[in-house]
Image (cartoon, rainbow, N blue to C red):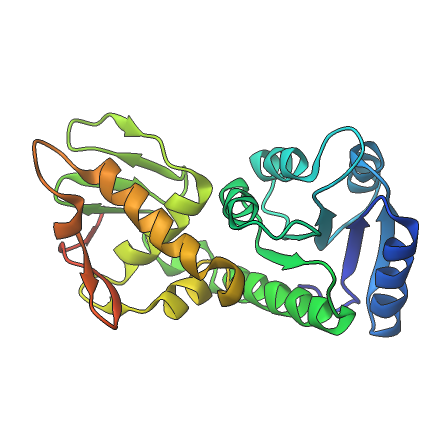
Length: 241
């Protein structure tokens, strides 16, 4: 996050909601641009430096999940999804598309501002750490996770497909082997999503990663072990590649 006021792009088709968000953020030291759909969003992103996107799911034309997926394929621009939908499936899909946080409507603008600030602080901390502060690839039990290419390869060298959320979670485990990590820890370390929205999705992601790590009858649960009343433990020894 730069020292200048953060520039927030609000993508929301409801004019009243859009203006309400914009007024509150501007009153709290943010620069704000507004878009009513994906085409306007693309134009603002092309012509302006944007620090974070507040993205509604229910948009005319290309919907918010599709826009989130498309943004994530080309950039790491922080995204907070806001929507009237309250279904856990939508929240999990938003997570898998690469959203940094999720806020259900109706919401207090103060909470949205708090989440914006939290996401931008985490991004600033990650940028300050720099690319040389950690290994670019890690290995465990013959597996290789490439942190630059965001790829996982099995012991035979074949690439194993991971969603963005699955990769982020596996990276957290690989960087902290032998430590019990609670769901709250994992939420904080994987972009700090709100526990109320995403705690259950951690269990879903762990289950998916375990299945992808199973080989020749080897159970993924021996690699990522559940600790009762504690969380999860990544058991293998991890080496820098």
